[in-house]
Image 1 (cartoon, rainbow, N blue to C red):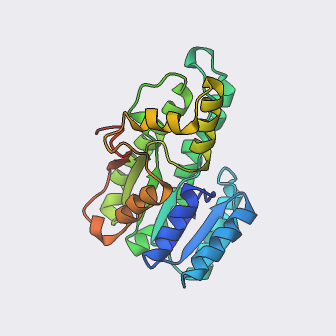
Image 2: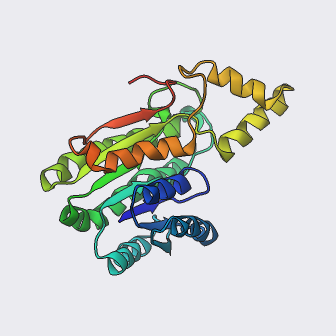
Length: 252
């Protein structure tokens, strides 16, 4: 069974559906129940089971309830795929609101660590795996991403620390760092940029993709496939690593 945290209409959906296509039953966690139920319908149409658990991972009691319901339903947890995050507004660190930064760190790092803490006994019992979705922001130097870069650097350090601690107990912990994911949010962003500049969205895409080795941007299923690989037995000797899935936008 795979628990997917942060199920939205883009990458979170793909993580669940691609897990189901690989043969897994899933537990779906996020705040928006309607989205969870839509994804659950897709998973079930593939012949796999799906448990919907509306959850705010910053709520400790809700996280405990999520883990309890997953274990009650399936009796085990084989993997966690975490895509839950909050993107801080673009701003410079020198003028950033420190209280807002604390709030985003709580969501993007501490809540994720707490989720792994709660799942650790079940993951140890199944000799399972964890993949935390990170971001190419840890590699690039684009301005205005200071708070988000700090969050994701903290999440990367957390994944490495968890690998050190859980590895001797048979649990692997890795990260996936996507580039621009060609889905609703990036498409809307490119449309805004295009309107502001008076050009077509296709031109914006071509300009961005023109700096990428494969001359295109990765899609949600491609990010999800990398995560599913990392929780599979094909990656049984891989832990403590961060796999960039950017179509060559970043090299690492």
